[in-house]
Image (cartoon, rainbow over all chains, first blue to last red; front, side, top):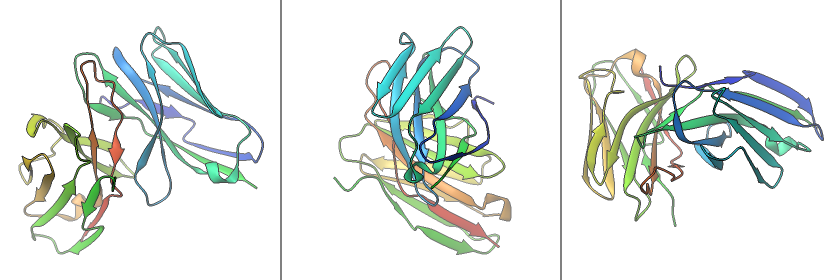
Length: 111
Length: 116
């Protein structure tokens, strides 16, 4: 399978805490993206990190990429109840434009 | 912009019937993707079009599935005949892919298919 894998599969935290999700993939990438999916809705793009970047920030989001380990992490700081959703990483492999999604992490933020 | 528009949002049909799912991508986007989402298999890429041409259909599960993109503003995914194991949420997504593949995907709200 060309899908990546996220861990943990599920994460439950208190409001105000930080949430960290990890993504591993298998082959060389052009870029890696993180998406969010609220229940019953389509996925929404959060952030993109290119293969030559190591870290990127957007608001309360921080993404890191380690191409030697073929892994990425998404950190959501100061979580809010509204952050409750599933989070997916998507990889775009070298030489292609296809987006392959991981298995997702279900995040629950308890008010 | 209205975003990616999919129809129907929900479809319930009986085994053996033909199902057609429709997608209108965002105007100006040059790439369109069909995905299937299930609890067991997650998000699977079924087929990818670039400039209305199918580029990669290796994810289409079997010959019962077919997809077309007759023009830049419309695509269909057809299942004939449908089977209960086809029950899933089918997503269409579009993107403006530049050289180097650094676009982002814009998803529709999905079509939830139930085959009885």
